[in-house]
Amino acid sequence: MLFRVTLAAVVAAPAFMITPQAAAASAAPVIRYAGLASCLQADGGRRPCGPLKLWLSDGRVVPLPGARRTVGDDEYVTAAVVAVSQDGARAAYFDGKDGVLTIWTAATGRAREIPAVTWPDDLQMNALTLSPGGRYVGMRGVDASEREVDRVVDTATGKTFTLPRGYQTWDFDPAGTRVMAGDNRTAVLYATGTWSVKLRRSVYMRGDLAPDGVTVAGTTWTKTGRSVRNTVVTRNLATGKRSTIPIRLKAGETPVRTRWDKAGHLDVLTRVDRTVRGDLRRTHTWYRLNRTTHQLRRLDSFVIPSSVGGYVLPG
Image 1 (cartoon, helix red, strand yellow):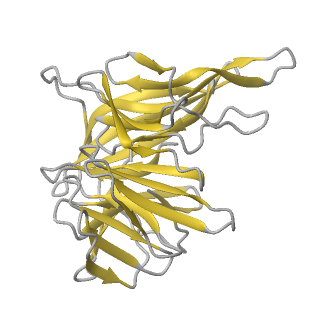
Image 2: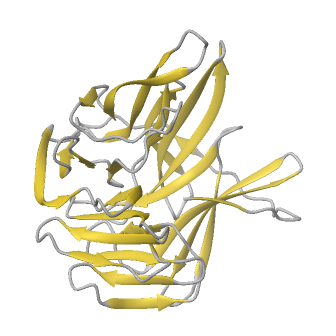
């Protein structure tokens, strides 16, 4: 997640290195992002063009013609219709005809319908969250009384857990055994399935939940004059211990979010915006962070063109 903090002074950081991406054996493709493409109109504006699509790490673009989408007036921004798991392995969306939840898997290219879970007609949805493994889906929206409602659905059983009023689903751990939720004052860790409270902490620390089920990681950047300091921050919600790791990025490169995998690796996603012949190029890069040496190893890099007006990243 992206956090912006302004400090009066910045402590000088030691030099860090970004190592080039090493040659690796062929890996299963993952979803880089999901979104809607657009077409130019006669007046120079843009309109939604075609179905919801998934952009994969192997270069494929997979259209989802049956996926339900909501688009604002005169906009081409997706809303409340798709989620990509933080590992990029799966995407969740609702079928446009019968409203059935569907989980699409990148490794197989196959979609699996979940008949027990359908589009919630009592909510105007504005966000979806998908757990690694695809078992749990968080659905956040507004009911008829304009009260925000957040539910987590177990796709294996069809059972739904509704979070306390004011709470939002933030993140699942890599195994999908815990979910972090809360509001601007409190973070709560629930055991998925039983939905029992495992930990409650009076601290605002949104980010990605580690395999240990209690450590959260996020990113910050601070600017003082022309100097920018980019940092990965971790906090143990059980002990309250907080640590920071300065990272060195290219000029104009900003950290966006972090993610953990099951092995405990911590990755950082960055973004650089450049305009090329009037076209905005949004370059995103995933790095693996060595928390001992503070080095970054590039895992993947991709450009999201301005023709994709609304896009959803993993997580």
